[in-house]
Length: 261
Image 1 (cartoon, rainbow, N blue to C red):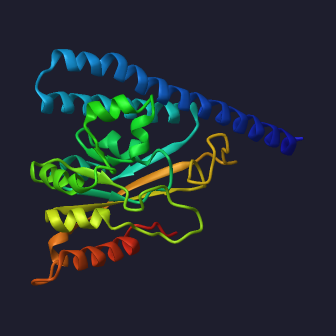
Image 2 (image 1 turned 45 degrees about the vertical axis):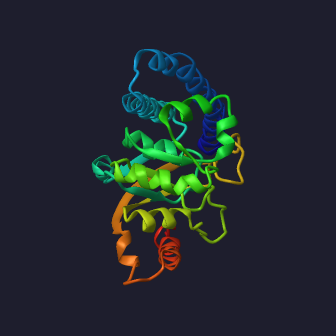
Image 3 (image 1 turned 90 degrees about the horizontal axis):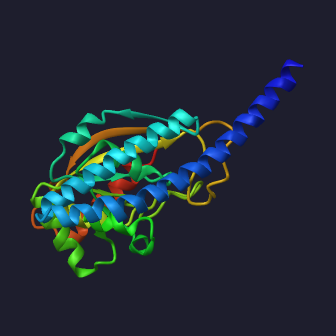
């Protein structure tokens, strides 16, 4: 009887987490849309200075992400833990590089970095729920081609930290970690430091091959661990070409970023 009761309770808990996961997706999309429609448009009307307007928008985004994460934990949909997150808030002019196991990885990191920039996929600019946020927060778009490197260097030199997922997309379960060379190119050509961040989820959840309603049997827990700080200049040995240095740095990231258990 006790075993049957436990099975029923586990099933009810799973059904609850499926329903609340759907609610969180609605909340995220609606929140982004309303912030862009009302909050950010109001900023455009009242704050003329572009840099101040961008900083206020990013603070609003970070605060909304903290609310979202706490709400998800309170509902019992997922749990999370940060290790050494204070280091992120101290970074200036740094490239933040992280692995990318879940859909919410940017939310986790940006919740701890109110002024972080981000390199986002061009497809998101066509998303009605996200494009207003991307525009107001002045994020970099990965389709900017020839201007992307120059813009990244300028922002890093001005003290802005930028978040990049070197894989370019979420990790595919069971496949080896493969980093694109974009993050290393920016780091080497800018001479900026890199801060490594490990993101680990104790079960498959919101990964590249999962739908939102494919909720695992046990509650997911995400651990975001801030790790070492790397000086990109050490990869430029003497008069070595920056392209060769970027390849070396990319190989290092492929070894350093994957989470092993």
